[in-house]
Amino acid sequence: MADASREAWITGVGLVSCLGEGAETHWQKHDAAAPIHDDTTFAPYVVHPLALPSFDGQIPKKGDQRQMEQWQRTGTYAAGLALDSAGLKGQADILGRMDMIVAAGGGERDYAVDSAIVSGLATAENPGAYLNERLTSDLRPTLFLAQLSNLLAGNISIVHGVTGSSRTFMGEEGSGIEAVRIAHARIAAGQSDVALVGGSQNGERKDLLMLFAFGGYALQAPFHPVWDRGTPGGFATASLGAFLVIEARDHAQARGARPLARLTTVVSDRTARQPGSVTASLDRLWGTLPAGDDSRTAVLSGATGVAPATAEERDVIAARGLPVRATGSLVGHSIEPQFVYNIALAALALGHGRLFAPCDPTGFEQPHDGPLDRVVVTGVGHWRGEGLALVEAVR
Image 1: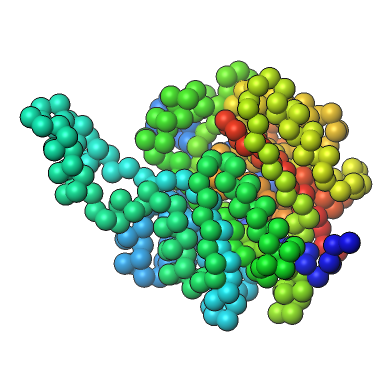
Image 2: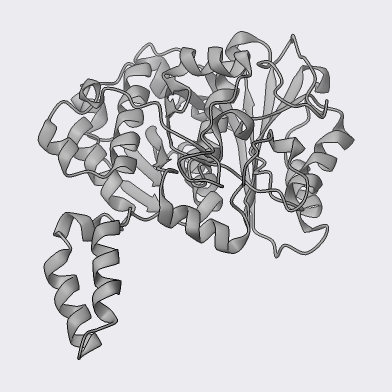
């Protein structure tokens, strides 16, 4: 029998995206069901641009801000919001033993340097020697190291004083799923009392859009909500930061913290994307979730809009007859931190006792006024990686 004292409570949420910053702002903007997107800056591709916060609010030193790239500033800012939400900002005794698990991609390219090097290679007498010289002289050390996702964790440690164990993952959507799964498992096993989990993405990058466009995944204008993208579909990249504070029930109670929700189950899978594989994976993962009252259960989907995975996920959800929302219709798809973002939204929905308004011209998403006690969060990667989380209200 599971030890109730080791329940994983979500006690803090930090969000920053195209919708703004903070939990309440995100709830209100999702409930307004008005997507914010840009289809001109990177035409013909659609992106969801970051609503730039005043980074001074969570990263007070300008020097710290200058040495970070945009995705690092976004993640460090969101992490600070989560710590504030949990009432842990500045609590050195807890931050010193807080575990941190970060899921993020690589760093950003310096387009000017890239262009100069490629142009020079065409006329260089010795291309190999030229390339080595340019890489050693044109790339700043901080820029080179920014290709590592663990630099985000390092910046969070420096700025916010989170100095317990640190783990970082790369690997697209699956990395975010695994970050949450491992945090949950460590708390349940008594290996961790409190963890900061999340990541960030800068979706307003030509290099990123180029890679996704080559794979056939980048959404081209005109914009459509997730369930209305058809074949081949695609996702609109998101500039977004999302972090959670997850802690053991007894640890939270000892410091008088109130839970936003309980993270009950986190499961993951990784299948070869053959026809029907997403359906089989989600059915298998769903079978591991504890039974509950379907009349008080809803789904927050991380569907990307990429065919055929999105259509298979839609069929799985439809077969269960549960109300659903795809958050990607409002904030876009942020790859690594999307699963974390959706768990945060699930906690907010449970606090309000209902789902936010639908954003779906196909009619698959229906109005839902509650009651709501359980939310199943799905994560189906654009290429590979599947996961589910069950988030429940703590009454």
